[in-house]
Length: 300
Image (cartoon, rainbow, N blue to C red; front, side, top):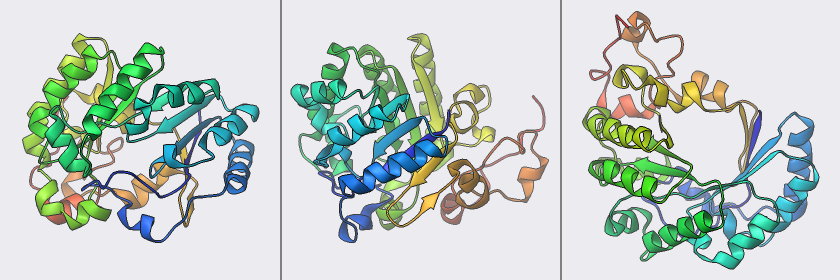
């Protein structure tokens, strides 16, 4: 099912050290309800039946509920809110979103320890709010999809975080390697680990998710580092075709963007058995750490 990813505004109540769209809060205003309605109409006509309201923090937009209702009336099949999760701690607000017909909630949490999460997002008490939000969503029997960005500060906590999420009975979780853009680029020496050093922790976390029968995956980690865990590569197994409506541009196919512009490969990738299905890392990563850790797969 084709998905429309709509950036409804660029205000946020976090100050994440890894945010890829950091500077946009300084240059762009919230989209008006009329603008959002036109986007929803256009993307539905273009074949999208799944809409994601996101960036920066969509729950700060005064017309979010009205926008969800409008999307529902256009007969979008899946209506998802991607959020930092803090405002889901308000149960009455969550009930309003559910009543408006949100079908999936995507909060983010970036540490098993509250101190880790709060430092990464630049907001005190954020971890408690996200956890309370997840509990509210579970109590209200919602579909909860978790995103966690992998950084130097949190990668050793990833298995413990996975176990916590399983015990909170989330529907799905994803561990996405930090994309070195925006504030992540400015803080890259502090924020970005090597992919090699995180892999043992990621695989342990995936084992935990599998044990608890929770859908779990990774993003932006190539096949050569994920042997025996290829089932968890999001780009290959889970990601739908997506149109992204950002502040200043519209990307018709995010899949095509990743293959043609966003990610990179080197000469040795041509020797790998997975070359035709592997996107490679985000192109900024080898500019920081080089290519030596990416060893071609020569046998299954």
